[in-house]
Amino acid sequence: MDVIFKSVLPFLGIIITLIVIHELGHFVTAKMAGVKVLEFGLGYPPRIWGIKRGDTEYTINAVPLGGFVRMLGEEDPKDPRSLAVKPRWVRLVVLSAGAFMNIVLAIFLFSLALAIPRTVDISESRVVEVVPGSPAEEAGLEPGDVIFAVNGKDVQNIGELGYRIRLNLGNTIDLGIRRGDGELLELPVYARWSAPRWIDEDGVSQPQGPTGITISSAYGSNRPLTPEEQEEIASTLPPGETVPTTRYVPATETQSLAPWNALREGAPRAPESLILFVKDIISRIKGGVGESQGVQVTGPVGIAQLTGEVVDVAGWKSLIDLAAMISMSLGVLNILPLPMLDGGRVVFVLLEFVRRGKRVAPEKEAMVHFVGLVAMLLFAVVITYFDIIRIFSGEGILR
Image (cartoon, rainbow, N blue to C red; front, side):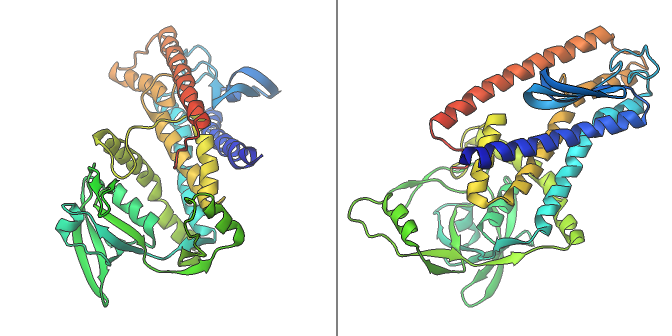
């Protein structure tokens, strides 16, 4: 039942919301432009259910890989209410509106997550160990240093520090350091694309991060473990090893931002999520840092698995951030110049500008999009196969 309530239902809720918002962008702009909308579909055929209201049929379909708004004459300008008969700028607006709505939704969700009261780790990050020969050692970082800022922006915890460092892979970053009795320093440290493993003091091979430091929470307290927690820990320890009775807990506080401040802080996270994605892919291709090595691609099944893992690790409120990242990714993906996607259709409109108003033959454009659809479905099948294999093998996405 946990799988249903933590993975399947939240995933369906997120993906349906994102699809509906995307297609509403096409639907509303098409209606405003006087284009006849034949069908508003959730999922791809075969059809499961449908109802007609006015000119438009609203349908639910069997293949849950997206949605569509089917407009009259998308490629052929024979009807006065067709999309193809409209001016080029109108068609560009209608075709781009879905991606635009996903990007706007991402900004809204990132901002909403900051406006909702939430428990935030404010423990900052203390350097435990500096890897010999690493950028951190070259910059002069020392064990015991507390890192409180990256490029002048405060970082409250280990997660924010990692986020800011990975956002700047391939660049030199300025780390705000608090040392010893309160001495403040700003040290320039290079964030590497890739890093070799290193041998620690116990002779064990360890992965390195971009800068070459091992960190822990700087501030916190010990709390007693419950009997149930001690029992769970004991099940993972070798026979005879002492079971701890306390656990170190980072310092936390409840935070929320006023709506205008949340928007100011949340809006940049939309483009940052894309930068982070691109940087991570480049880093993995170059060899990776930490435990992130090799390129991992996932589809709907994998995203459903990820949803459950996010709930387990970070709680239900974190799904807002996850939905924002997926929405941003969908917006950018759909505007790429690929057949069948919105960006692929935009390309054919732009070709009219290049060809001085001469259109590509409707049957040729339709064939290109059909081939794109088949390729997309085949790719989805392959990705889903590997997602299922990963689940049955017990592997996770976050762990």
